[in-house]
Length: 556
Image 1 (cartoon, helix red, strand yellow):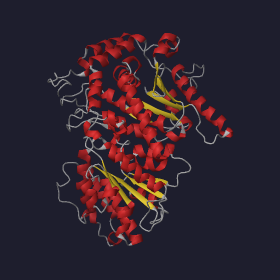
Image 2 (cartoon, one colour):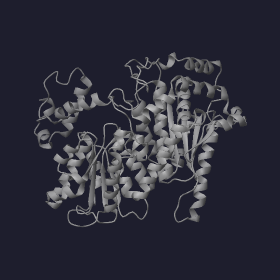
Image 3 (cartoon, rainbow, N blue to C red):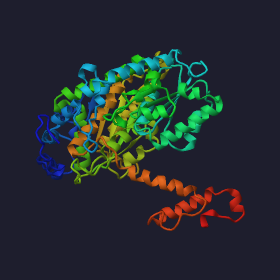
Image 4 (cartoon, rainbow, N blue to C red):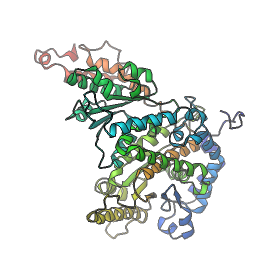
């Protein structure tokens, strides 16, 4: 790699070889983490462990961090040259080293004047096309093949092509939006069947999102949807009028039967899990309208500015990443819970699970050597008080170490205001605060069955209200946190090769599951367990008549 002046960059040391890393290790070894009850008595410390970012309060005063540890964590970031790497991200350098591409998701939400050349040439025009397209559907000017206005949108994608759009659309869609939305990801036929149930073939719009236009799950579901539409309309024009594609392979979408004006581009420098801000977010624009979608982008850009301009000691994404490093690598905490206390954010844990673990679930550094340290913890969670009645028992009295993010929204957001629900929102906030307090302080009780040890470190993020701008800022906060984690561990946060081998094996297994006779010995490889399972599944799915005749195909 080269630095910003074009000079060859010296190989970076492994994380554990950094001087600041060794200092942090010594701090962690000096004693068990101080009791949070004691740390929280230090008002100077508490004030230093809160910061505001693009309208979001980030409070990490309930973490096992004092000012000395905070200083050592900031020194770790400096030793990793975090500011230079941050600038490389925004400037469009090839931070995705295994694929040799930039990661310019920030350019998707930036004003044209702030976009690197590669983005400035294509992003504004594509955004303008998308806004015109979605507005024409919302106001009924663009219709299905028979001239009727659209009523249902079925979005077909998987991973980053689905999780972000679904999260934001369900969280923010206004009550006056004329459209209903279904999201299909899984290749399980029940998923697409559910989405198509009760759909009107004349008023259903399909959005197919696949960067490569080869994604197995997406193309299988899209083919089922296309066949469904053709069977009910008997008109190929229906597919041309009612299917939209978002892809980097626009020619493949055209060959599939789509009109050029219904195909929106992606680019190699946008990773799927960072693509919400592009035409992948078409359902968001359909649900929120042009103003709402632009507010989402504005909020994310505001967080980009904070991340790019705020000093390290007040930089919320950097601080959040450093706290994660401290918990994961020095306190041995292997899992992190995401706890949104807002029903509208119920899909946030799944979104962050993909963003964080697909980005940083790595054991190899940029140069191909082993990290030598643990990387991202297991990410999981659930919404509000429903989680309290499900898994919070484990958090309070279980034996596993964990960290957590509490996400609260200050105003209830009901429009028009509904006084009868005000107390419920106050109860929601009270429970979120109470759970965080209980995890920190514990419950000393003479009955051991009731006592809870506490002393669990958590963060609290507070949004003044949940709207498009604040949600955009929140999601950008997590994107930058992931980037900062990756630069400390010296891993590539922008590729995801880990699942490829299993997907290739599935292609062979698909054929073997459908054969009318057992595969020749050895074609399944050395894995006897897989061979036995294939035989068992083929037996289950063998035609009933063959079984009744004694022709058990799995044993032929």
